[in-house]
Image 1 (spheres, rainbow, N blue to C red):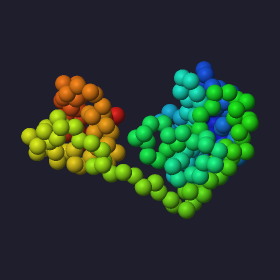
Image 2 (image 1 turned 135 degrees about the vertical axis):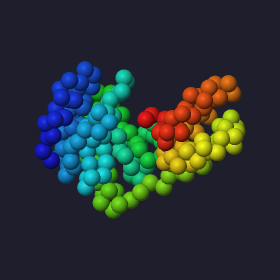
Image 3 (image 1 turned 120 degrees about the vertical axis):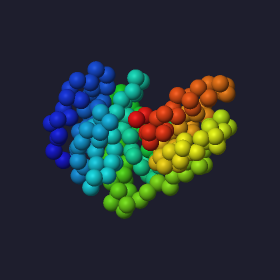
Length: 194
């Protein structure tokens, strides 16, 4: 696929992981994928569907497969970032030599990810209702019909994000503070990160 010159600045201006990012880009561009910028990172799509994303963190460079949970992982290269991530999986790299050594495997995983999109496969996701509802938030929903209605209208992903965020603190007062802070945002139909 042709290089999207608008994305060159992401690769050229990278302070860390520059060589690793460029190696991954060169591999991905050998496939029939469209190179776009999404979430500030190079994203590669097939027929308008996200397939893989190159991004970096402090301690590694990663290739993220949006439907990685559906891929066969014979080499154990795919990592689930957190227990709550349902679909995406990452390959993490800390050296350019590692990418070069694993290049045949990386290519096989990319080809597999494209096939997943061609077949229209979907990751079966847990519904938001499967996540624990903190007592403090349940009480607020019972007290405020408008809040309950607004929360129920949110997308499943937004509801899940709120439930996980509200449930995370160990102390009730911290959970209550978080809930109080985000009630206006929920009433506006916005997600945690909006």
